[in-house]
Amino acid sequence: MSEEIKTIKLKLFGGLTSVNCYLIKTDDGFIPIDTGNSGKRHELEKELNNVGCESGNLNLIVVTHGDSDHTGNCAYLQDKYGAKIAMHQGDSGMVQKGDMLWNRKGNILSKIINPFMGLGKSDRFVPDFYVEDGYDLSEYGLNARIIHLPGHSLGSIGILTKMGICFVETCLPTPRSQPLIPSWTIKWLPIPALKN
Ligand SMILES: [Zn+2]
Image (cartoon, helix red, strand yellow):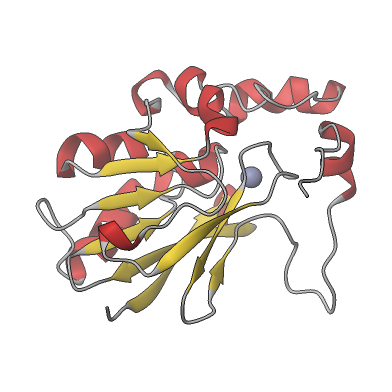
């Protein structure tokens, strides 16, 4: 299996920040990791089409977690390109109900901004299948496994390729000199039980 990776950076909040999507080209087609926010749909689609990613070869979308800035174009790509969507079940209610606090406790501030951060009705979706820790993506042409990384949300995952690249979103703020879990994340979530 051979793989090429393209990073697609989509701006958020008028350019104050941005979110990354990663497009992996495999021997069988293309696999985007995350899809960005719906406001940048045109930009995302242009980037996909520029490298030949289109209906028929967009095989699978892997979602790192349910937040709308990472899942805003999933429903669109699922419908238009026939792509399957894989994510962890821990965030399923976020994308089906459009509620970013579905699996989070939330403080007052987060409850106030939640309606503005959710997925619009037309952008909500039902994932085609769920992936758990250790799930092997090789049947989709990607030599990689899923790592379950609950923290930012209950269903946050990383995608670790055999080449040693790990795709992770929002678990660690960057750029920083050392890994750091955002303080608000700790307030939002119960501490998950550690597996043996
Ligand atoms: Zn997030």
